Image 1 (cartoon, rainbow, N blue to C red):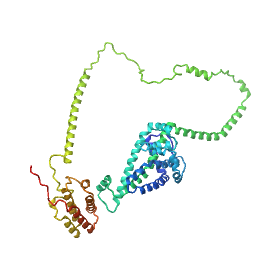
Image 2: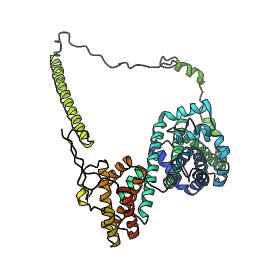
Image 3: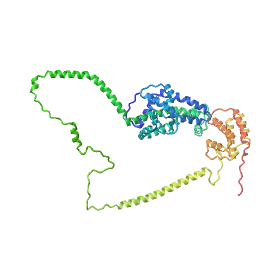
Image 4: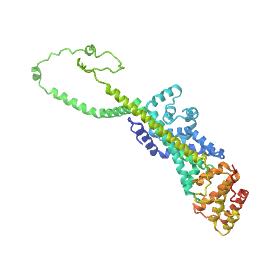
Length: 500
């Protein structure tokens, strides 16, 4: 890939980084995976029981792998076809010479680390020289570098979420998309290291782009500061002039020979008839320079720190009447009255909004004085106590033997909701299945929570996913229902109001 160094704006420079990754994708991703995958395998194996810690360790080690990506990118940019294996084998020495300790400790949360990485790795600076160089680079490039970090962090999160949802949707046993999204944000996926592995895959896709964009932003800043493009242009011009000089030597010699022959052919008499011009001595250059420097406009330096008016001056009429400023006082008073009225109106509107949302909050959280009635229907299911048979588990088991599985699961689901409301869990009108599940997990003991989760998963798989469920599984849920909910409050037993 051939890159022409010239002054660019920051966003054009980062776009060059994206193109740089696309042009060297095989070598760049090969070196990255060769360094990243073994370390990830070791970390995931040692921290299999704590997926979040495993992901945190790999995220913290990103600056180590960024050294590999920058080494490949820089060498490929300047025409050095360095093998990926050699770069990975030299990673310990490369990391040690590029300030890896600071990168993994106090500089880990540097939002412009992609811009600063070439200073430590390519220039091998540290301490005060590195800080001075970074201070110069940050003057106009830190803002785009920070936005670059935010942009690629968001891209990595979107990649991880998209890959996980794609895998979840393509699995044989499907669930509603709302359930998948709810499970993602509440951390209810039970696949162990699945989320951590998906996060690592997203990091492997995005991080080389982040390093390359920071590197091209660094090149753009160095080009503006030190004129790298001008230096390269001078080198190219020197080469062209040298080639032209070599090719023109023979032509110049021929011309000189022709001119000498023509001068020898001129008659001597014609030369004698020409008048001889008397040449006046030319003034010396130093004397001319002294005469020019005698001018007061030259030979002195000054710094202007204020603006001074140098235009023409106009004198007003001496007999002119003073300007009447009374209208300005009236305008100011009128605007102050309007501002005061607008402030009172805004305060009244703000108070009305506060009271409205306070009343809504109290109503939704049952802090109002009015008594709240328990709902009769939840997401289409009849949860009135009188709608249930006396023996819910027995009736559901009988329906399962008759292969009426949907009715059996619906009966068990409704019976569980009624028993939970009898136990004191409050469900409100308009609650979704996810809301009910959150109420149960916050208030119930672990055994009943686990059973209720099994029952909800079976109901969603049959009712929404339209997947077949065996009768034996439904019959087992009915028997377990009797164990968890048979000792609850009997059907229709409502607490009686105490006399005043």
